[in-house]
Length: 193
Image 1 (cartoon, rainbow, N blue to C red):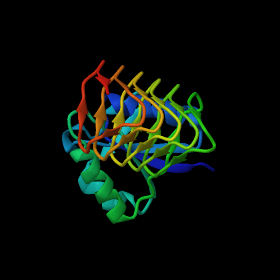
Image 2: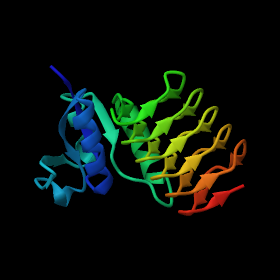
Image 3: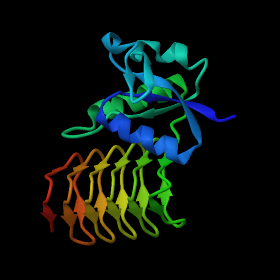
């Protein structure tokens, strides 16, 4: 029998992660955690079963969770949730779409979700609690630190270091072998030199 997993956040990013979980086939979705006033509603067929206040109680039944809130300007909410879940004792597995390519010579840490058609090349290192979104390319020898969102169709070229908390916008492209500072906000379509 498959292990269950709780989804933390019921917005648009949650719908995309549901698709990854269903395709990957490793977990059964136990339910979604969102605001109290949304309990009882559903997100593409999965019920919102509680709020943050219920996480301690739900841990008795379900040991796995994934943060399904997206990240735009800041990673603060995702960091706070990650720490809260870890303090309760939740396991935050890495979720990888079967439609992504992830080199066996790469390393991906807990709580990170690799979306459809993302490409992670050899010797790339991806930290904790990251989103590597649809069609993003993380080239060889890159380091993406914790709590980053590498957005749709973006390109991080070889040897780049993306520091904690960075949002790297859709279709943005970096030059090779540069360092992107902590908590950077890279606009969609940017060229980073």
